[in-house]
Image (cartoon, rainbow, N blue to C red; front, side):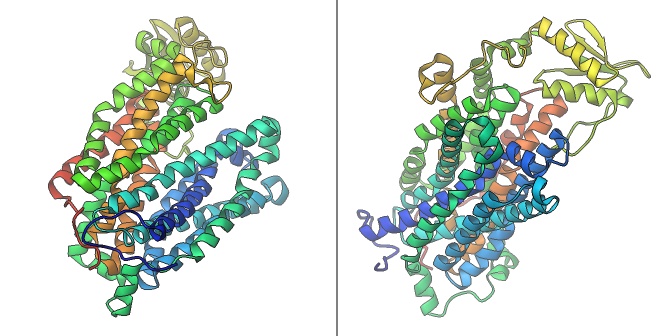
Length: 554
């Protein structure tokens, strides 16, 4: 394949070579995201397979912690592979990352469970998960930089927007493969062994990706810099120890990627968790609702990426953050009203209070789920939060027993087993729906039940959330590439991206649910993305430079 000129005087039509660059880079990145998200989609089954020595609740905790580990390690992958990419080259670095990701995922599909090899199973699983996070930390920056450095002037937003579709397409692909496998095998066989099939399929995707990427040449911008001897010998030092560049890294993180990350994860992951864990929608239906919204909305990554070539990256990203922050509350309330009308009505009409001596009540902030509560006040509130009940905590007399007050009816809370049963009966009598017997709960029996009024309304609302995602995410790759000089571009752009998405975004679902449990309000978790998106709007407005017309060959 011939090399491609990175910039030209004016934008022209996309050449055959440029199309190949985009397809090769994007396809590999789709497969990497597919590998990464398989684990999250199957966390409960993986918990049962690899943490079977522990009680069910603890299994889920460990499974989610292993999932979070992949997010936490991503910035370290950005540093390691960013440095390699700025010294050795873009092509070979993201060839290595896809090999690490694909092989790690394939091995998960072969890994014996805890019943077979004991404690070695979860240890190996977590090690593989860490390798996945490291690989993803290097993959995105390499793919985005490689495509941008091939793009003609005036079309970098459009070209890199194809890379921006990959995370959503990877999530969509993982959901479709899981749904298809579940449908073919049935739930018992899928839970027993069929869950391995999506992981094992990754070796086919890996083979395709490696074959395609081997045909790529090095980025012409990087190759020219290397031929002229202008490359960096210490990209980490130049990127982060030099204040003029380190300042840009901070501005990119706080004034761009932080808000983009929380909007992205709210619109896709938190929406899924909200449907399942709070609104009690079954997993099959929730996944279908999300899948349809992704299918309808993914093309807008390219729309907003191309638009950013016309009006700039900054106004689109900041507008997406601002609109999202202003509308998350009403959108999620409308999702509740359509997905579970009985629950929404009960939340609005049933008054629930936990009356207790304040000295006997601790905080319920438990973002990783490892805390064990023992005080009656904490147990009562934890029970209500997990039952999707909105409640207030009211101070009672010193030394008084804990009481759950439901529309004026008091239930003394002593032993969880007895007290939970009594409170559940009283809640159902007051209007809260019974789990497993709620005729108003949205239900999809097959993928084309989208014309049911409830399902159609929810998909429409989820589609709006995906639109916000495309606004903030579509132009971000071009903006990050354009902020930094060629010799330290891979390193400089990768770190803020993976801190913003891996930490601020990746920890959003668990932290938001912890806020829900701590406050007794099912919508309180939305304050997490609203606050961080709003901070990004303010910092970005005053400090983030517009980059669409910069010369990235320097």
